[in-house]
Length: 134
Length: 387
Image (cartoon, rainbow over the protein chains, first blue to last red):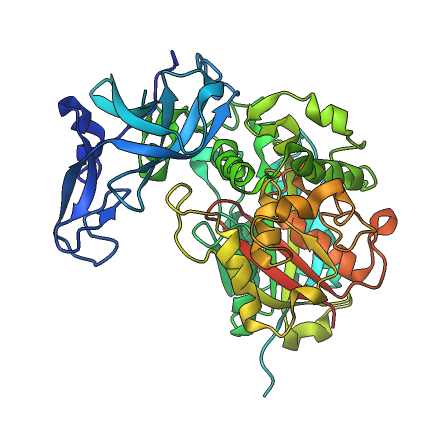
């Protein structure tokens, strides 16, 4: 995609998620009391309402829960087709990330494929994309 | 004392078109005039206004008219109004109005949804387009950076998983568009004027797999109005009143990508919680179809078939046809009538229950209908009955 990705506006809740890629880390908010994950990130655990939450570096591996091959250029300069997917993270139960699957032809992607995170940096934001595990 | 009830007592609609030049406020007034005449009311009897979502200055084509714009130009003396942006879904505005009249906050409420997306795109100097969101926050930050700008992308992913897990086919999915086009072709107010063939469908270009062009509604300019009245105010009304027998909306988690399935599933089940009616009593369904997969989630969620069997339910299209066991989207749905954004389903349910469908009227004196709106986490459902 030559297209310039939309840039998330950084704030106290989302900063660790969008910048963790600088250190190669995929940060998901975890509760230090109950151990469960809250995504999108918030200042409170959505499971036990503890405020004792912090970004936690997860493994960055997962499976494709579902996907679609997008053929419509929604913005100027958007190269199509490309894969939009919903990835289920291996070690953060209940968390899904909408993302792109890169590095494979669009017709080589399927539900249940194993994937791992790769970061693409644009203007200080590290977008977590995924590619198929070889 | 009997339980308070709420009724739909009038329906109206403006011209439905693409790139209309009449202003969205005047289209709304056109639809209001038709609806109050239909109900046999006058403007001075209206004391409430509800709309979805309310005026959106940053995205005027999507919602160009506020409840107070309408109150102002019509000189209404209202006691209650709402722009229901954070309600359950489009039909949530009608649910709010029903609750208001039951609570005695108003007697007769104008409920409207005005859309102007086609005209707005053609006249950007008058209706500035939403920026291509270079700077995103809130929920859009989790999808837009990945090129998933459209609800087509989000909804397509539910459909792909249904195909993989349950074997839904494109031929089954196509029945939604084929049925919509067949019904729209005999609805004089619909955008679509002729039927669609399976060949047309299969040769159409892809938007976002499995959705082709015909699986997605198109930008439309129109206003749709429903009048909701209190049971105790029915003496004012001349039209056959249609009772809002039950409603439900957006049950469970409000997220497009963190919930396992669309909100239609828990919301569909919840609709039956406060009524003695069951699925067997339903004569026709008007199910939201901004994208062709959404009626499948509603059919399964409401219990017309088991989860995973929606594709088989649609197989061949005979069940959902006007002369089938469960006539669906008899006015053409959003794929045929136009993107009326939810309110068209309530309008058409009332038409059918009153027996005013003309060439598209279903047989057998229908008495119970369902109208739904929404996809993804948005979900609102109305159970409507002619007593």
